[in-house]
Image (cartoon, rainbow, N blue to C red):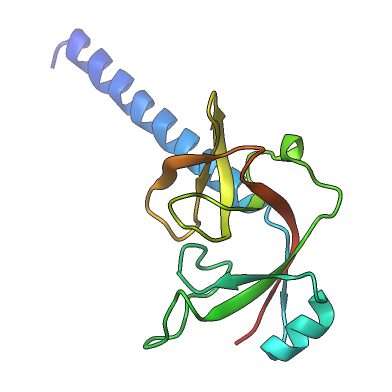
Length: 156
């Protein structure tokens, strides 16, 4: 090998290392700031602790492992797998990378819980922790924003 080939190989290795570092840093950022996750014995106990203003989270699997998916055989769009309590003081302007937000996208027609991944000129791009891709069909905007999660209750 000549010195030019060695230089290109070394630059290539540095580039790969940089990409892996950035990817791992972004992944840690998305999971590091999750709100308190409280494991309780039952859904009834979760309601008692969370209170009547709690928001139900369905078992679609989009937030695994933070929120479990519906059990095998159960309808994920009808099975409640967690309750979340929203920060009463949080506004759209308070969303930051990693925030868990409730919003109502047109594509779902119901409230959705996902994590803020990136903002652009159209609003916040969201992701489910258990999803392979970002949810970029529709952004979270002030118009469809419901709230930022303060704590989460899950049960076996």
